[in-house]
Amino acid sequence: MKRRFFLTAIILASVTPLFAGGIFYNSNQSAEYFRTYERNAATDNADAVYYNMSGTTKMKEGLYVNGSNQFLFQEATVKTENNPVLGDKTYKSDNPVWLCPNLYVLYKQDNWSAFTGIETIGATAIREWKDGLPSLDLLGKQQAGFGNPASAGYIALEGALGGGAGLNPANYISRSYLKGESYYAAWRVGGAYAVNNMISVGAAGRIVYSQQKVEGYIDAGVVIAPLTRVEFDYTDEALGYSGEINMDIFPVDGMTLSLTYEMATPLEFKRKVNNGKNGGGMITDGEKKRLDLPQAIRFGISYNFTEKLRVEFGADAYLEKYANFERLDDPASGIDSDKSYGNTYEEGLMFEYTLNRYFLASIGFNLTQIGQKKSGTLDTSIPGAHADYRSVGFGCQVTPVEDLKINLGIGVTGFQDTYKYADKNDRAISPLTTKEYNKEYLVVAIGAEYRFM
Image (cartoon, rainbow, N blue to C red; front, top):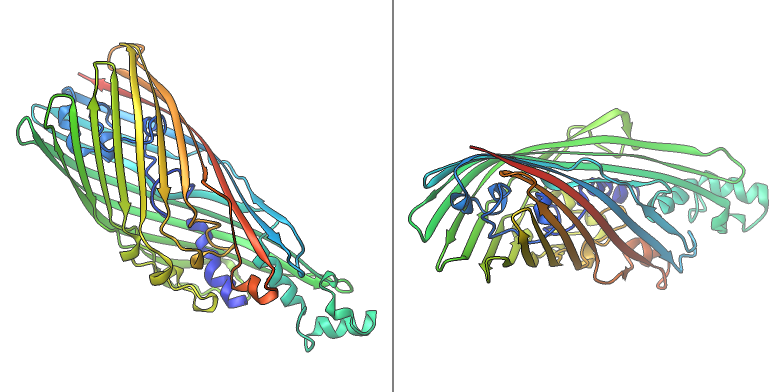
């Protein structure tokens, strides 16, 4: 159990506040996205540097600066049910994230464009479980001696409280705490070229840097003795390189067809133990393991039905089945990443209506089918990441003066259904023991774009 926990707890830091996208991949790269939930065929604003590089050739000439920030309000819960050792208890994480920025700079001239961008490309999150998690509390009780008649704690209880005292889980005290922080920052540079009026192409290279930090403790003991604490604190870092290509077709006036291919980004994380807190020797300083960002394919189609109404549909595929997720392997828990992960898919549909030259409003919808299977779920890892999500976003764009656009988007995301799953730890306790998982998110995003002539 000790080894299983310390191998899987690091995954917590990879939890992405999933509004749409893959398990470790974010689709939310601008305020415009949250008011539409679909931007794959966008040709209007400079966030197309991420969503549709070729579409930037359709924009007006000039230098664009587009920046935004997302405010993330999230809640995740894990509820134990029919657990004879821990009882029925709800564990909750509800940390807000106040900084999740994106910045794009674009220069458009004649039939070409050049651009750069800084993105929070994936797994940007904070998860703090102030009351710990079930697997940690169970580990604490085992460390205290519950279930092991040969342990010092068990023998002490037997002697002090009388025969059979060691069989009562209430005599064993366990408290835990766990916090994970993660971000993936990407810097891209690229360009696009309009071959003719019907075809544009684009390409970009990017550098991805990720840092993930996990810290926490487990207090364990028995009712007649002081608690002992096991602490862990470590940081994992990785640097990777990749690229992407994109093509747009404009078959008729007002219609855009877009296709983007993003290469996988190999990321080998190296671990650093902080302040000597190595979980009682279970965490290895300098350990290296792969957890790549997978390949992605994105498609979009946009059509202006009238001068005021634009409709866009898109579909994305994140090829996680073919990514190297070595860092998620945990034989002790029965987790084999090659078997526990398929591909993630998402679909988006949005409606945008221009009221006048100063104001437009939009609404969008997104469905995401997560590729992670139940067999890859532990409460110390990604709570309920395999569940499917549904999202709705709405907002507006205001143009108070020419060449200045201000975007406001509000998005709500959650499981399509809460779900229950009994992992290997639960099944070892009782065939009736299980856990219920749920996650919900509210996002407020604001951004601005200015075109310099």
